[in-house]
Image 1: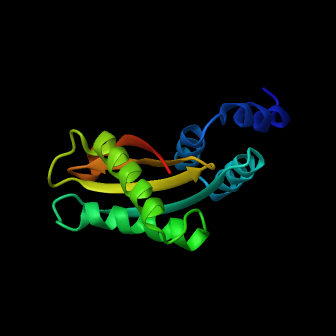
Image 2: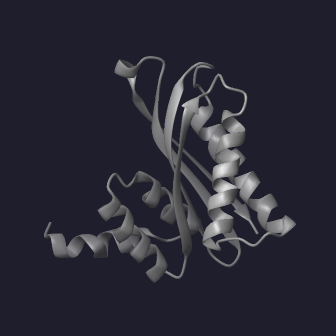
Amino acid sequence: MAASTVPGVLESSIVSPGTAAMMLALTQTIYDENLAKKLVAKKGLKAVVTEVGGKTSFDDFNERINRAVIGACLNSGIIEKKSNDIHAVIHATEEAKRGLLVSVSTSASLALKIAVSRNEHWIAVALFGKSALHYMTNHERAGLGIMHI
């Protein structure tokens, strides 16, 4: 496939906030992330990307993910500091974490890329990264949560 057709293929894959968020979370380079952000914006969606890492054994890890998502959404203007916006983001984040953490050991290390995308009525949180009990056993994990605003 010629490189010039790649954006067309990627652009046609963005059909919802969920597909937009997952595509952004899956990017591996800043170049790809910026290209994906442009394609997402072209579809009329807002989006933001952030990262978080740590050990699941620490009590604050799950809360750290919530803070990272809420902070990124507020700082980028994806949501306003209103209860219904915060509520939707928290629920989408919790749903994404359930998909990601379903079988993670309580002492695993995680490094996650987090992407959030929204349109007028829906917000999606995508988590993608690696988990491991030992640095030589890294494997990939993903989670997606979607909530009505």
